[in-house]
Amino acid sequence: MSATDKTALTHPLTHSIAPDRAPLDFAGYQSVGGYTGLKKVLAGIAPTEVQAQVKEANLRGRGGAGFPTGVKWSFVPMGEDAPPLKYIVCNADEMEPGTFKDRLLMEAAPHQLVEGMIVSGYAIGASTGYIFLRGEYVLAARHLRAAIAEAREAGYIGNNIGGSGWDFDLHVHTGAGRYICGEETALLNSLEGRRANPRAKPPFPQVAGLWGRPTVVNNVETICNVPHIIAHGADWFRGLSQGKSEDGGTKLYGVSGKVKHPGVWELPIGSSGREILELAGGMKDGYQLKAWLPGGASTDFLLPEHLDVPMDYGSIGKAGSRLGTGLMTVLDDQASLLGTLVNLEIFFARESCGWCTPCRDGLPWTVKILQALESGEGEPGDIEMLESMTSDLWMGKTFCAHAPGAMEPLQSAIKFFRPEFEAGIRAAGRSDHGRGDSDVRAA
Amino acid sequence: MSTADTNVVKLADLPKPQDFRLSETEREDILHEISQYPEARAASIEALKIAQRRLGWVPDAAIAEVATLLGVSTAELDGVATFYNLIYRQPVGRHVITICDSVACYLTGYEATRDALIETLGIQPGQTTADGRFTLLPICCLGACDHGPVLMIGEDTHLDVTPDTVPAMLEAYE
Image (cartoon, rainbow over all chains, first blue to last red; front, side, top):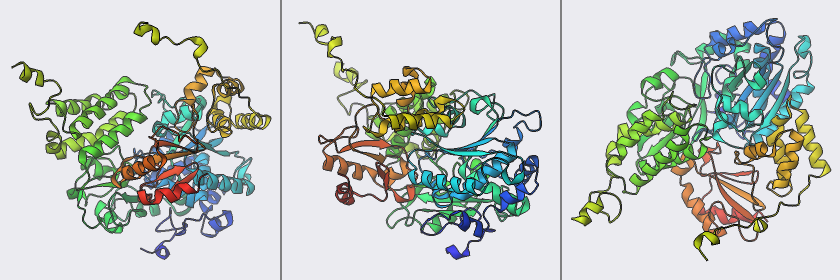
């Protein structure tokens, strides 16, 4: 599909993005319909009505969990009795391995996120917005700060915006790197200047978040959708999925790994893995698809036979995985499955915040067993131990979803490729080291 | 002499606190950051980054001074500083190379690029070259998985890095 096929009505998130990714300035963004949603809101749509439209549009959070955005917003106290200070926070800490969509939106269309933040802030009656941006995204920080300055100059950030009587300020807050900062409550702790340990829920951030005030945390792609919903309506947004999904809108999908043309594309939500893989030109010559992660390191592997499953939250869930961030990572037939798992679990072990014992101690243990299996030095019982980890480090047994996320690729790999694990167990008497051999020597 | 004796570290032998004072400009920059938030400590990461600019890393004396400005204890600020990947509490080279070792770069062969860096620089990950030019560190996914292997040198992102392109890429950094 060429760039000229894209319109604001078919590709709301990317139609304004130039092939060289040079961002539009304020005037340029306005000339392609930018700030239409915000102007419409300021012309007299009540905050709760904005919330209702987003709920009606069936927008689900694009950060990975897929929680309905309008419903999330509806938990925020509204009206005259609501606290005077409320916050809207954009989770722009994109660090999920295999995920590279929010970088595109922030570097190439910064005004879209700025407009989304203002409209979303209005919807919950926020006084201030923070874009929590990972420190490594240097270009995104520069572009977002420039866009914020332009929007401020235009009177869209500041006091009495558009004569509405509503005051709103917006900041870019850059982090200093740790995957856990993407977890909603850890992000709030980090933003407050603390170690990024998750907080216990309840209370949920919508009631007591940043500095104890009602706070909504939404992903970049989620927030970028909001002004388009207001500009063109909830029905239009639901129709964008073209009947491929019950969910509304388009979705940024992409592929990485040994494919001919890795990249990211905006497609109707519910498009299939096969469609996405075709856009990437298929596997590189000489490589076959063995398995794929549908949406980042913390999702379960799927097989080639799952390629026709619609890539939406419900369908991928029924297939045994999670849509996550919707960016496929393909595992080719020549890559080492156990090597890939070692890589994944080292990442999760390194990035554990250390707050709870199952995660802090369990993940390095998982790495140790997988490394033994990878080098053919596994012990009988290792696979069963890994299986028990996938249960012992699961939801409800750890403080947040970090360790359960680490268990998703592992549990699915054991399910689909158990013989490869079994091949890593040392044959009895084959080695001079380790338990079991002493009996042989004693004899 | 017993083994136990050789393991004793004398207080006099411990490294001395570095002689470091924030400049007036650095202090003002930090106070400006603090003014952006309802609570001073929210500026901690930005303040640490300001303190890090001059030497490339944050010495103990800077932790103490920044902690006073933020109104938190030295231990608390050190807890923050040591938690995050991009704040360095030990000396680093003039250019920090952070190479993505996450799954997409693993599948596209980052290990060969890392090995080329190890060979060219003569250091292992976590180490600094003897001339103080480069420090090599691993980092989480850099969000450019369609162009793996990916690494950063300072604030510059380098895409599609291969062992062959490593020497020329390094030349630009004195």
